[in-house]
Amino acid sequence: MLDADRIVEQYIVTVKPKYMRVFIARSDPALNYGLLCAVLLSKIAFSKLKLLEEKIVPARRARKLHIGLFGYSRRVGAISLPRAIPFAAALYSLGIPPEVLGGRVLAELSDGEWKLMEKNYVNLRHDLNAVAGYLSWRNIEMIDALCNSISEKVSMSKENLKKVLKEVLSDIKAIEETLGISFGPRKLSERKHENHVNNFLISFLEGDNVGASMSLLEAAKIRKCLG
Image (tube, rainbow, N blue to C red; front, side):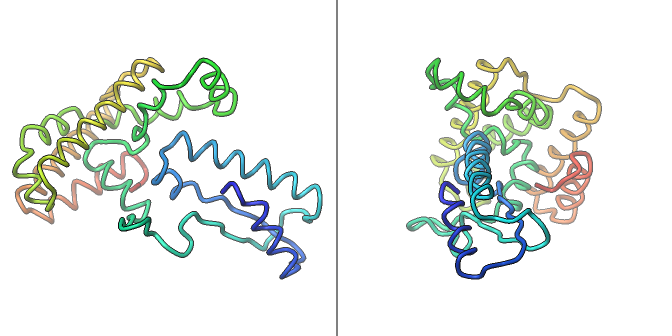
């Protein structure tokens, strides 16, 4: 994304389109780096594209070029990354908003970095507060209590599951302490959402795929998105 202007300029020089509209995909960077970095990277990319537009690019119109972080591969070393929407949908369905991942970096920012972040990501507190009500403490407690059976169910070592859960709790704590956001259901709709994701997890563990699917969809309807 930091090379968006260079990539687009090469495309323009080679193809010479009459009109062009560039879309910046934020989902894959968010999957790889977290919400904060994805938003800041998008802003940097748009700033560079604006400068490029003023230099050689005609007004944005119908044609488009999609520049994706994983346009050709979703593999980093030996790790195959999932698609962003199913990944986010899975986390939401577990009662863990994907936006919280990486939140512990907020506790590590210097005063200068914090001011720079607030200047360039004005709506960070708003965005995280908007999803905070979808966090299910009941599910987190269930995952912790049933760690052995869950790790076996998903073919994951107990140690890795406990490590991931600890990191998620660290992310949540950092967001709560630095931004003053309280996680967990607050509105009635969010309480209904927690009931659905709680039922999803129970159905999944019981092997009730039909029940799990129904609960997943009902929760998604309340969020107005799958992931």
